[in-house]
Length: 151
Image: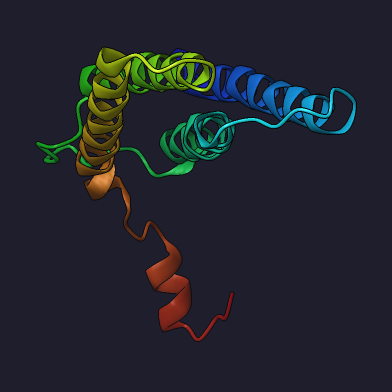
């Protein structure tokens, strides 16, 4: 497993633990403190687990498992993959932090930050899959399929 893959996977685990901890706080707040929590906290919790953890794990595993880029693949760029990691990590952390703060108070510029972080996450995901698109191809399986092998 190479460095960029480890970045994606380890960050995914950190986001998962943070997201689960947020859910634990929400459960404690509701059932022991008898207080509610706002939709911003629900969104922060859910988003951190689904995008920060699940999506980043998918991205990391994809660059690890997919076949190497073909020699003539002009789209694949390991440096761009690293840039997408940095954008995803920063945007996800910013969005989570802003939404946690917004769950306790209203600060208009944080609402704008949440939207901008969402846009950056979207950009990072699109860039990532644009870059690895050429790696999503058959490597040997088309030969086995032609022989009638089912899998």
